[in-house]
Length: 262
Image 1 (spheres, one colour):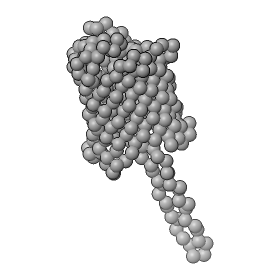
Image 2 (tube, one colour; image 1 turned 60 degrees about the vertical axis):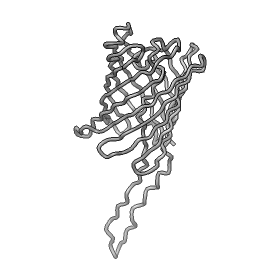
Image 3 (cartoon, rainbow, N blue to C red; image 1 turned 120 degrees about the vertical axis):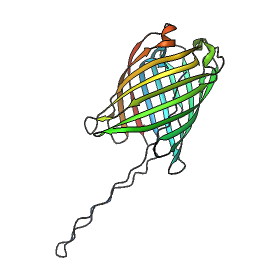
Image 4 (tube, rainbow, N blue to C red; image 1 turned 90 degrees about the horizontal axis):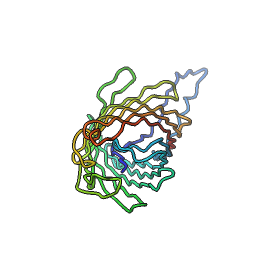
């Protein structure tokens, strides 16, 4: 299954302000030109490659190819609806996955609150499952130009307690919880670093209960143009507690994605 944990992301259009120089009666100066308004929709398309498909601490296969759309629609100044379908294929294997993700986020000032729903479908097996969720994210503090962001989510998968998801047996409902921190460090005008750390917990998830895994990730977004961003990353997933007891390994993976906004 692919989590598309559902913390929904909103892209805001910014318009440049106009500054006026002083005007002399003898040699008047024209006002500075006004920057054209950004009339983009704020939607984005992403194509990606991952050396391995690690979903919530468990490896599903190597060489994942994926594509996704993120379409945020502002319903008001504070409320945004986001539709984010995603499709993944493990090269050389009979594994395809379609995730249909929808969510509402509300800017409460102190934090962004979200409610969402994900439908997972696996074409080769015909198996499907669904997952309502709630999320929260906020800026904890600022250190210089860096903002430390905290996020958390709770996800109720209706088939997570099957104990053998690879056989697509399904089962009873199971909870999956995660929380973590991330920040963006600007290196140059076009290159940034985005470190992230998260820890997860499952309740009747993968057939067990307890802490799941620790994920450490470092991304490096590179702005190729105003609308295109290339993001290589490296990450480590470390099984702890219940996943470790199941014999799940630790994994070091990497990948790259290209995102185009329009």
